Image (tube, rainbow, N blue to C red; front, side, top):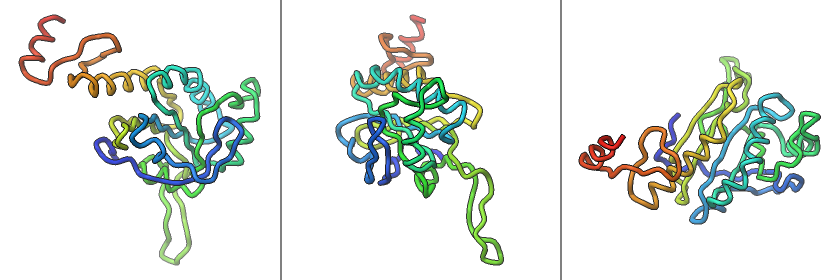
Length: 209
């Protein structure tokens, strides 16, 4: 499922915020008109690659905040599982110290709406409820603008950790486009020049590089 260019699915769910507080009605809608959002899914609490990603986003949180970006994580675990993992130290394989919100998609409706649920469920010919696959989220990441439109997405399989630097680069690119009305060429980084979205602009850029 490709959500780029579309409104990000709306949801309300329980989440753990500030590393220790469970809230029952968390929604990304609170950021509409105010903040860009990096919303990312990870497969499971108390696993191996996942804590490296959550800690990496926490380490870069100041950079996201400087850009007015909210970082929000989500998995299909319960809010109680999130809370327990947040009490466990990094040395013990936990994510203590992570402060951005972690959403509990226990009904698997959020990961389904964003197209990142690994597996399908339904009823067989005898009316029995069945599921195929692990029924957890792939490593999906969505960059959502202030209007709630998905501008960038990437989905990795379970063993493949994501680049937080690349997520930050895409934030910079999106904000550059919004502020300057220009487009970003391949491998663009903050501080570099963009291109005017015309044939003349592209020719001028390519002539310099």
